[in-house]
Length: 248
Length: 248
DNA sequence: CGTCATGTTGAGCGTCATCAACAGGAGTGG
DNA sequence: CCACTCCTGTTGATGACGCTCAACATGACG
Image (cartoon, rainbow over all chains, first blue to last red; front, top):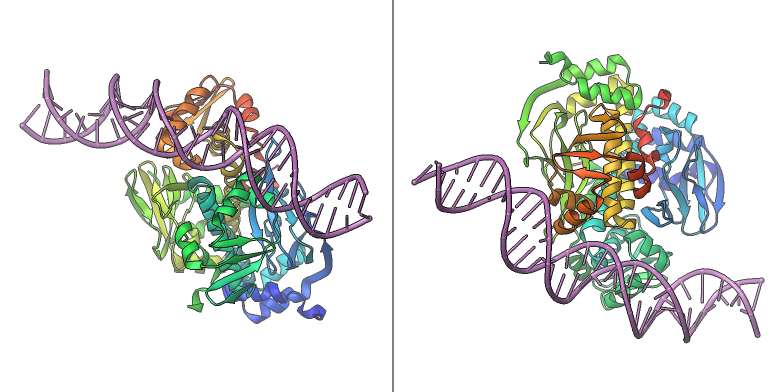
């Protein structure tokens, strides 16, 4: 178990990768982290309309941001893993415009808005790193718009899987085995449908048609990554915002 | 005509509305603005893959961000008006992940990345305002994901029109006439299709079906705004990030 | 052993894409 | 002034993609 002083390790580590966060700024974050809380699968960590006074940092587990339409349809608008603060936006707004929901059991810690503002004043590099974090999310959101608006069912699914493979692999959360690549997959087919804007039934049929290239069960197994990327028309440009400029 | 010292007026004005930008920070922006350039309708102001060394500030006209899939389909991922810096993201990335294209004749000015960084160091409030700007865009992008993934054709169109009516009205770019509301509309039906993820033909038919509530020609005229909002299931929550916290 | 959540399959139908044709206005050149 | 082209909007016909309703299979769990 981490000592309280290294509780924020995954978060700081991620910010360092994205933005070359200097060590002092990372330590400042460690000092203002408070508490650890566990959420169960399905729990809303933050709900639409809330006005939280702290930011949540995901230490372990999968989380999604999502909105529900007037007709009751839920759309997942983002997927987040360990090392992210999905409600950072709450620092500047008086009311959340979306929900943040646990897709797996989640362990999280917190940073009060007040203390975070102070830390950012003392360490402008911290503010910049967090800003860059929001730009990473924005780039991903743009590509999801393309996915939802301009690709058909099977390619939508294929594209999302390519993206997740890359994002997870980058943070050591994917496994390679020869050419193939696999990672944990906690979403149901219904949830995948809410993510790609398709009905459960259609997701099911699309997944079956994709077997041979990918298999999606408790884990995603991509048997032939280049082929899947070619099929999806996947271009990872938009994920390069997640790499610090100095790191290539 | 504005003197060079007030060239950035619309931009500063917007940042003040969003983030209570202090006057000194606004003046700093005025001092580092350089040049004015005109773009023709259809011009790419920034292209996918570019690595610009300056930010572009739109002084007049409509602009969209967009991406093109491997299959050649274009998806419009954002609409921007006067007073915005649509390529702010370029400050932190080595290569743009999308295009920024003029939808009308556009007048723009520029701020070099280096000078902007200096100004942000001297005026942390400026950095924060620009960060908030990116959060506004992110909130809109999330709702567009919902629109594309969870609503059908006619409601998608209706929803976008409700959003634009509110955003434009907020900056004095819409006209009221009794209950009805109207604003400039420079997009072709094909472009609207690229925005809502529908074919041109289907956009055409949907627009005809919506007549009576909205009419979309050179201007959009919403005859009965509440009825359109009810039909679209429009909830303006997500646009409240565009209002400074102190302003309500 | 019943219940519940998830995945799977079939049938029927609606939304929306595609292909094709045409109308009108704007701009161009003869 | 007319012929021509290009761009945009409009309309029809056809079929594919994806939704909905329904039923059933399976495994986890109490």
